[in-house]
Amino acid sequence: MTTAILAGIITFLFTALLTIAGVGAAFILIPVFIALHIDIHVAMAVALLLNSIAMSFASYRYIKARLVLWKVGLPILIVATALSPVGAYVSQGLNAQILKWLFVGFLIFAGAMMLFYEPKERGIESSKSKQLVYGISIGAIAGFLGGLLGVGGGNIIIPVLVWMGINPKKASATTAFIVIFSSFSGFLGHATLGSLDMKLLGFTAVASALGAVLGAWLMTEKLKRRQVKLIIGTVLIFIAAEMIWKLLVR
Image 1 (tube, helix red, strand yellow):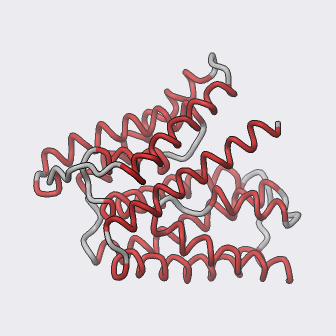
Image 2: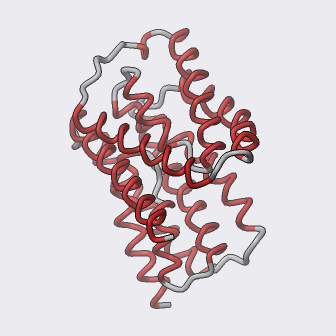
Image 3: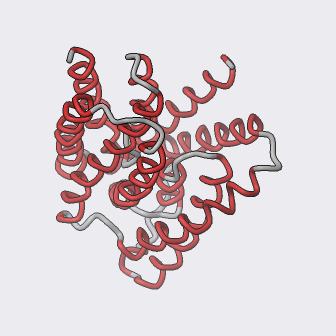
């Protein structure tokens, strides 16, 4: 019971923060759950399901606020799903360590772009044809690189969307919608490898929903464009730092 309550508190805090960035908290929650002596497959399955739960609650608010770019998000989801296996196939002939270092480099670059670069908004939100083209292009990039590097596409999608001139709030909201489905797919894969801890899932699911509601409210009502970019950039740099630590320790 104590472990489940502690996991719930941690889930609430990280979900509230990372919902603003639209990437989901699974990448942080998985190592935290493992540190709490939760089985790795259970930790992965629960964390990915929490991603879907959190992003579902967040997306409801984002959709009401008209922040989700459907013409961008749906093509990304479809094309990324199709090309992810291609990237995974190509990765078989490449050194895994080199791939991870390349992704670290990308994250540092993308994080720095978020923190220091101010792209001009290109107004693609008003053009349905541009949204479709951007969505297919970004989906191809995110799907292939996600499969190639074995990472979640959300970390790739957000910086590319912002770099292409999309408002950071809309980039975050659109990515959050995509993460619902990509995380649930990952959950189904890991759930077959370990039995779910229903007590853990119950506490963390409630915490995840509450954290997502808080994070989505902050993003839509309280934070400005520059503040959202700052949070996203910080999250990307943090992910890079975590990966560097794992690469060096191993």
